[in-house]
Amino acid sequence: MGKILDVFDLMISRSIDNQKNIDISELTIRPARYEDLRELTEVLVYGFYQFPQPLSWIYSLIKLGIYEDLKSRLLSPSPFYCCLIAVSTDSQGKKTIVGTVEIAVRYPSAWSLDSQ
Image (tube, rainbow, N blue to C red; front, side):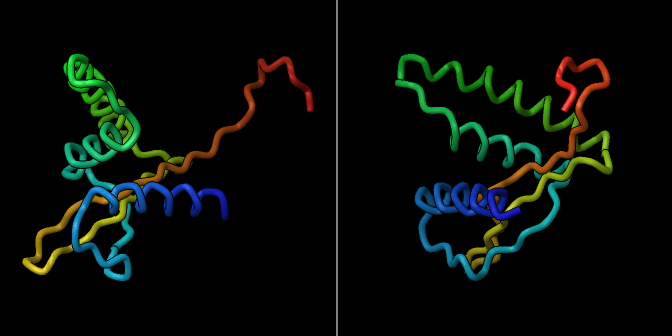
């Protein structure tokens, strides 16, 4: 559990570095919803992928893939999957997603060659 929180803290820190005037004590952590999909996709794409200007068109392809993947996960809820987001609210009341973490439980395949 500690590793998950460390990753979440790192993602929030990266996102906050790109934002101004965010008070980390004012963050709200909540499950992601379908209406968060576009902004959540932006956080993931720009948080993990950096291409030189001539290749910036690749962002659209990556965004589409991430968007469709997240959409299918959020519309088909599983008891073994959760996507949490950190939301910051500025002084004017505007809410911005500044971080995310996905948690999934997976069991080894019955067809796996590893019998541990």
